[in-house]
Picture 1 (cartoon, rainbow, N blue to C red):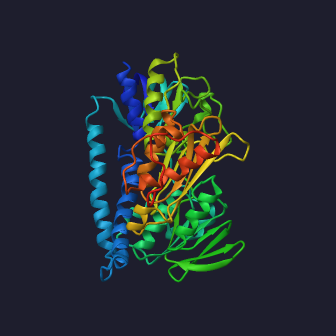
Picture 2 (picture 1 turned 60 degrees about the vertical axis):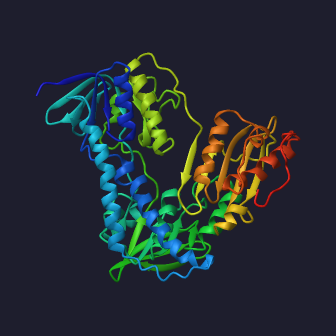
Length: 472
């Protein structure tokens, strides 16, 4: 087969790769999209969609248990694990099929099935004697679950998010290794579906939170449903058809689980790319060094996007980065910084967690923090979801919002309001001048905004009533 050529070759047909291909083609470039299977995106196959389907089932079970709070007698719930997983796979496969339709809609000849590796900076070997020559290359190979060597001896009983959703039914007990967003989401979902769950992490950080007070409140809330062990060293061995997990730390212990779910991060999938042949500078983990504004690797004709870049491993960022990388690859050697949106990450536990914009900073006088609790918030008490803490960060000079860490009911929605406000450069005073309907979760933000204004002596809107309504 003769060698192939194009302006831009994209390695990986996930969210970032698809966005990069569209962007490059829209910019007038000829493209090849190279993937080893075209099986679907991480989001649809093993990420966002199946995990949220599991969470939806868990929420339904939890709602039955909570009915008594409202004076409603409900028996059960009786959970059919096989039926839960069957629905999950059925709906997931529908989402995957929609992605496969986008593969089929690509112009003829764009999609190439093969496993790419670099021959040099502009040449790729994709197997079966085929080579692709490109003026620029976008690496969008995604990420894969980390599988620590400590669990090699019990590998037959280890799950990751790549394998969990293909279980025929739910296990009776699961030890979750990793207290990041993925581990905590899945742990709570499994616990609410009747699975005995405990969570373990060698670090002292919960859900990668840099705000200690919000992290403490999140842990307090989640530990109502399952134990969380932080700062522990783990060892595992086979025992009675399952895994005996032992941990050392402040409160050492051991316990037998049917399965171990490893959610200890998803490093970039770069093995086999032969990146050393490109001449670009690699970091200590073997990943290309790149400019986060342009996604260009070391000033070269190679660009990187999405989970492969390991910058912000969330879907909307992958799409954003793919678009920037694809445009710059098509325009190479001319590259321009892409317009980036305010950082926004959401964890879909109940209550959810959101981290927006700038992180909590040490008390250096440049950042002011406004706090609001959902313990006594009106709408939250009505729905029996009154738990959580919001910290909103602002510039001490003018009260302009810079970031937030939020755990509480509905924050997957209110987080968007904060992110939009940060991106538009709004101050706490300006936001308090906007309409707040009563009674809503959004009102729960008002105490934090008022506190910012009071701390920096900024005015609150003179023609708005600042009397405190119940829950606001």
